[in-house]
Length: 126
Image 1 (cartoon, one colour):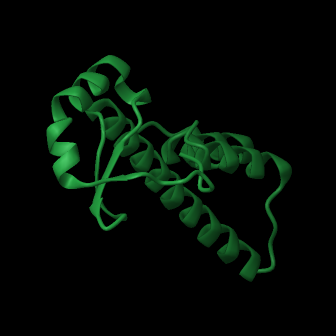
Image 2 (tube, helix red, strand yellow):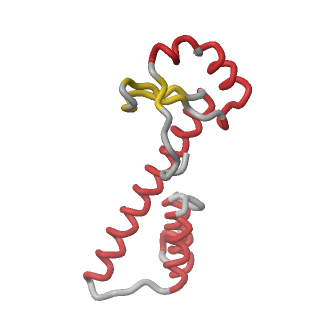
C-alpha cells in the first residue's frame, strides 16, 4: 500500500463476520492479497495478512538486516583505513562493494584481496 492511499480500518465485529471470506481471499491471492486493517473508531490497531505475505516480509526484513550489518562493517573498516591516511584502490572498492551487496562472503573478499595484493595467506595452505 502506498503511503498516500487512504487506509480503511475494519471494525473488529465486521472483520469477525467476514473472516471466512478474508481467509479464502488470502488463500486465493497469497502474498498479493491486501491485508485487512482492524481497529475501532477508525484507528488502526492490528493487521491480518496472508501467511505468504508475512513470510515474504520476514525474509525481506532479514535480508535488509544482513545488508545493514555488512554495510556498517564496511563503513567502519573504510573509516579506519582513511584514519590512517590511506585510501582503497579501485579493485578493493569493487571487491568490498560486492561483499556489501552479499555477492561475496567476507572470506571470499579477503581471499580476492589477498590474491590481488600477493599476501602470503593467498598461497599458504590451511
